[in-house]
Length: 227
Image (cartoon, rainbow, N blue to C red; front, side, top):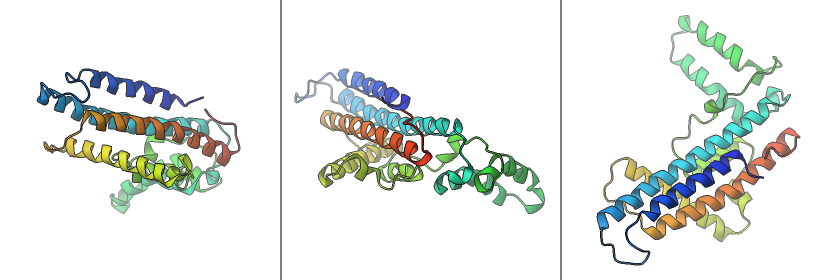
């Protein structure tokens, strides 16, 4: 059974396909309205990347929701999760003069002390864990899974180097093009074939990565598969 995050992602991929169906030129044909075709393909890249990032954030939320429902001591959580969760409060503390830090110290004691001591269990806040994720590049995707105790997700989703390289390359192309377009680069292009390949790779990686995440949560916390 897929996660709710994956179900929503698959719906999002259909939205990108709907956008591609608005392309006035058949695949392989000469574009009769090249400016329209170009705008559709560039928009598809931006939309697809947004759906990919939202999938990762929603997957993180589901995993956190599962953990919050378990009787898990803070010290049982992966260290990376504890560090990312506490970072926001600590960073704000460092930006504040010492004499004015009492409010931040109280906040830390209430929200994070349980992660580093035997204090009563508190809830994880999923948004705190992904403050560092600016875009879903392959490096950041790998970092996301490492936070959840999966050392190299690209090696976990496939055993073959050829497939790993293909997934990494296409995801990197997709996010790089999205970033260029978002920052106003008018020269960045994407063909109908490019978008089709990006759609296939996002679906393939996320479908496999969804299972990897489910097994990682179940294994680390000694529970049944969350999805």
